[in-house]
Amino acid sequence: MFAAERRQLILEMVRANGAVSLRELARVVQTSEVTVRRDVRALEAEGLLDRRHGGAVLPGGFTRESGFPQKSHLATAEKTAIADLAASFVEEGEAIVVGAGTTTQELARRLARVPGLTVVTNSLLVAQALAHANRVEVVMTGGTLRGSNYALVGSGAEQSLQGLRVSRAFLSGSGLTAERGLSTSNMLSASVDRALVQAAAEVVVLADHTKLGTDTMFQTVPTDLITRLVTDEPPAHDDRAGTELQALADQGVQIAVAGAPGGSAGAGGEGPPSARQRRDVPLPGPRRQGPGLRTAVALGAAEPTGERARVADLRRR
Image 1 (cartoon, rainbow, N blue to C red):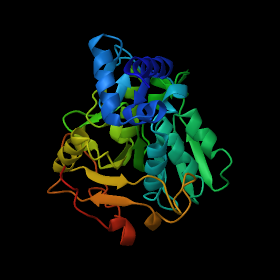
Image 2: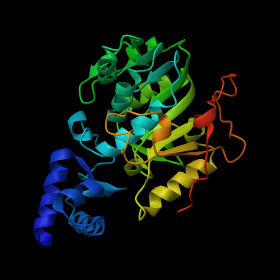
Image 3: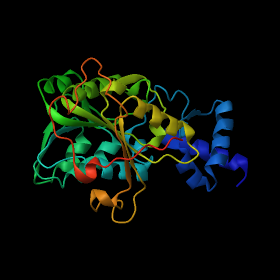
């Protein structure tokens, strides 16, 4: 395929989806990510798209948010692996909150097998994934429906979370940096996510490698409030993602890295947690205590033991 044909196809994919990862672009045009990156740079120079870490978006993507249909087709294998690993941190009988997003929807599908679980959510998709789970109680917030991501937002959602206390919050977003933490492109979604964080003793962020180093308009969770990041293994050439992971670990965020789905931990997430590829990074030093910071240790909650407490050093990239 000639360069002009490749670039036209890349442009059409980005226009159709709003945002596409380099990995997906390379797969579709059947070339290397190095070549795709060069094509994306050329298209950006012409003002036809914007480069973002690990992918390409339509111009103005800093404030533009893709809808659910577009997001659901991005980094699907990575989201599956992340959801498998994140589910392994949830204990029987816990009460948790789960925010809106395509990755948290994948997590919810796996939580349906955890007995005695109570899930508070503002996401219709999360609730739908758990609707037929006999041993899981689902509590939905109030609020106004935001159709682009099937989430309840606004003052009704935030007020329904007041006085709530759960063990963990599982959230995703549009970008994650060590400097600013988790962020999203929509003000109403960010406000509800902040209310979810206030209800939880621990905050677990689910973000694939394409979101690392990306900063969007509205901050949802500052870095010092993030207890753990669950992500996938960045490509070997992705120095920026590796640097961001190290910076997050240096600021006290525990890093859990899931490998691509395979073996007994396939796309359906079957198999025990030990069958999944994972790396945990412990806190490198005393946890930074920011205003309003609450951790499981401070509340006297028990940390996971055995396999879930196994940790390894984050490889410096």
